Image (cartoon, rainbow, N blue to C red):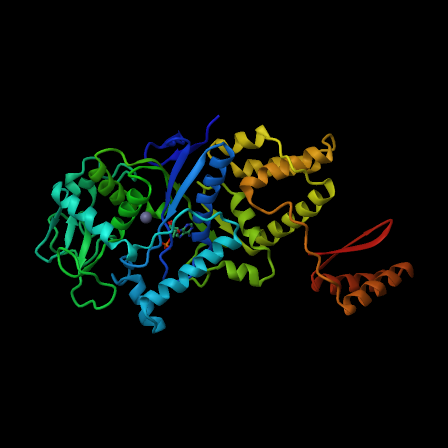
Length: 454
Ligand code: AMP
Ligand code: ZN
């Protein structure tokens, strides 16, 4: 069997294609004006999930993820997000970009996301964009307007809107994605490839059309075609990018290559937090560092995401992170007890779930049943978990680090043992509460009291 993933363009599952056994992947990367929130990380994890599953199926992956450090305008103020943040922090915009780019890589590493082969920056790909814009002008797909901006001529591309289902003739003028300064364009759905600098003093470059800066959509066409040899097998991004970002990217790229430049468009659904869209105004933006600061293993977040289908909107809560944290710890200690093996055998049940549009929730349910199945040997159980972990990436073979007990906790444990021996259940319960609030988990059995870290 081969991996099939739901393709937004054809609205059906589609088999992954490759060139000479290598699958080329392009994933829309972060706009580095702030820390990525856990919603962004859900989308970045989707690329890792796909790449790991492809490798498990025996193919190689060549992945590129761009760093957007110029040209992404905010919806509210039509201002470059980088410059807006630079004004707020009173720091040079490039310094802001490098700071958040570094933090992005740190988050990926904490989530055990295997790095892409390349992370090209938009600000370092300006020449590439100039070349592509010139080629689009020469092909009659773009034009220089009176305001010295270069626009893509949306009507020149037959099939505009096929990813999202938005038809050109039903796009109303003034819809929210249009930039107010796009005043000189010929048709309301045209978009800027190159914007004239105007009053802008920072993050501007010379160009054949005068000083200015690139539009956001052209960067992904330029970088994906340049670094993936003019053809993308799998393109990944969050659902909000379907329109207009990916629609515009497809129009630009296909106009250049003269073919369908992307084989498969994958979109991950959004993450909500405790029932609401994450936003600064709602005050519920959660970062991976917040998860770590609460004492949770960052991979607990990874498990939460994997317990949900990537194509379904999911609601994250502190409760679900806490319970994923406990599950990972339990699995790690059970696997250590079952024993590790150097040679992991293929588990065809797990592989089939993954290859069927990345059904990770079913993999997890299956593992929970393996965990409890008394007909399986320890070696069989261990094998199922370790096979799945090649894609789940939960470090399940890592032995649990056992934090040493403080003297005070040791004394409380001894006191509780004595209370139990004296059948003083009230005191024993009171001590249990104190031990649990210090992070211990206490269990009592006929053999006596035992404890572990939560
Ligand atoms: P940005 O840094 O805003 O350009 O977004 C980076 C990626 O995160 C894009 O692929 C977005 O589609 C995705 N994204 C944004 N918000 C969410 C969310 N709440 N849940 C999942 N993905 C998201
Ligand atoms: Zn993109």
